Image (cartoon, rainbow, N blue to C red; front, side, top):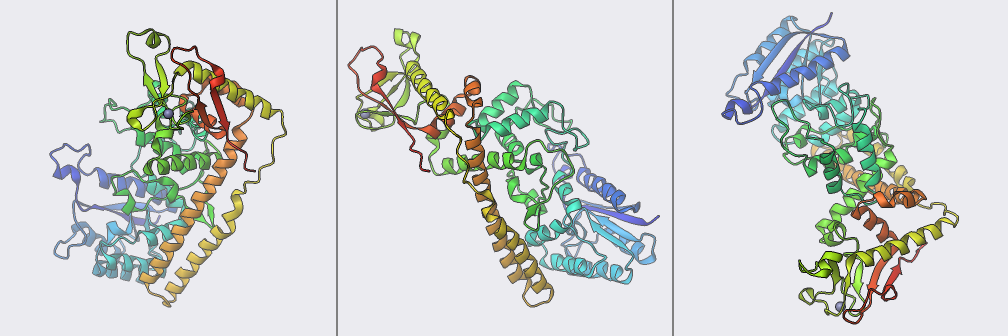
Length: 506
Ligand SMILES: [Zn+2]
């Protein structure tokens, strides 16, 4: 048996501070840290014989003595424990002096086990001890890039950081490895449908209709509806295609939901795979992520009207045949026959800057466009499917190089040829480039998957599509629908509707 201590700490126990308005229980955060350490102990084959608990105690204030930390030093010194587990280096030390005292004990006792659950700290190595000193020296300053780098080496523990204290992930059973009988299929369907035009908002509606609620701890009664951000986080989670992620402590403190595709763990330029069952393939996941990213960009650039107006099929597509202004959907006045029969029309509105010269009943126009589009799909299916020339692997060489360069920077830093600050600058820049290349790679895969999806199944599935799914498909082939003026009160005339097809650029 190898006896070790387990050290847990939070600077401020939020439950102690708040008058129980917070959902946490007193000591809940340290309890979570201990739970994670139990798992690590089992993995390392050591036995936790003593627990040190500095709940609600800051480590960066030299005037505050941490009682249990001091006790752990004594026990390490006299051999009562022969090692120490802790959640993260910043839980253990925040001051250079404390790091030096810890390091001394591990240097004197090379057999001692000193490991962090997250962040990869290993005090049995010289590098691990140097890192502890650096982290403590930098104090409150975030060195998460270094942490991330170190964490990548420690891939066995990487995912744990992310799952810390969290309920089981949507789509998997309690063991976090086996697929959940129904959730996995629900999630898979949604991920596959996103590149084809299904929106996160529509997925959210479908899931709420299916009775899904946010996964919460038992105190939450579940009356709160699923949030948009929760649904999106599930759809873009790298875990669903088997990729491991690691979220640095600094990011976890942020109240905003992190964009998890940026936190995939890489080794030699390739994502590290977890040991759980995947729900979709990496290509399918990438296509989903790229589509959501594109829509977000479009929205932030003010191009939202086209993609988010999911209620009417032709809004953003139909244009006035007289002045080319986009037609807006517009309800007939209640009580009129037109309202009873059609509900709404498309109109060139003078209030928005149009000429006001064109209006057309909505549903018949939509039917006509749908028919013309489906006819075109049938026609194109008769042709030989073109071999794809989209090459999503074109950045792979550079991605592998980047990993190599990061390693070289680390070596130069270790050899003291460059400063820690310079190293961090260089690493951050390389990581930025890698994130960008991965984003581009996802877009290429998305383009490929979208093309492949334009298959006979489209004809079968069309009726079951939501308006935005139809719209997305339509936009791939139809550039605009020109609506030419007709005399007042004239019957709907199909010949006045002109479809402008997207020209094939290839
Ligand atoms: Zn007009």
